[in-house]
Amino acid sequence: MKNIIVLVSGGGTNLQALIDAEKSGIIKNGKITCVISSNPGAYALERAKNNGIETAVIRRKDYDKFSAYDKALTELIKSKNADLVVLAGFMTILGHEVISAFENRIINIHPALIPSFCGEGFYGLRVHEAALEKGVKLSGATAHFVNEICDGGPIIIQKAVEVRDGDTPEILQKRIMEQAEWKILPEAVSLFCQDKIKVINNKAVISE
Image (cartoon, rainbow, N blue to C red; front, top):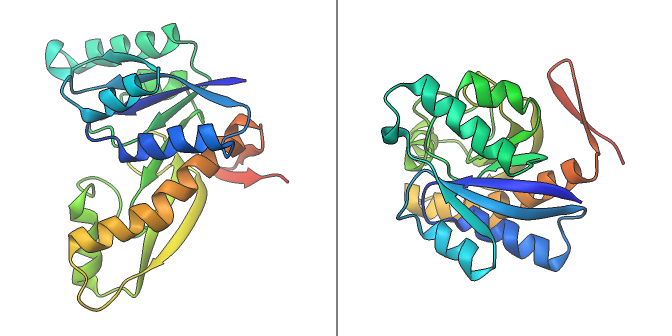
């Protein structure tokens, strides 16, 4: 059974999807053992507590230098015996130390079909605003491993979602969450926990 550590900053809807997936058996051979927040007021911490999951808080502003924060976050995650780290709306940049310590063991969910609408500055509603401005007919979500290039790690799963006439960024965001993010993130976590993902030449290869 693999230990899953989830990093959060806000409401924790993706965390809830993971908790529900674990309870229903969608996530196989994995257990969420700790939720770490960058924000002490994040509702995601309440979701964790309501489900008997240990929590911790680490704030970037409590460290003078980014390198000190990076080291502290790395040590905190290691102290929780993490097999897998999942970013579920974690709004603080990860540094070299944590990324290298958990190479191909950090999974993020991005609310677009990478390589579209991704990279620095593309987060939250900005992603959906850009998609609507471009007039795309399909958007979606991508579960991927994290490397030192923003949204540049190996893609694990993608799921397309229809963009409809009259969509606002908020409406599109909700549809992508419900139809894509909350489905493929638990699926990617389960594949990892079952040792079904190999990274070859920066590509994630999934075995049956």
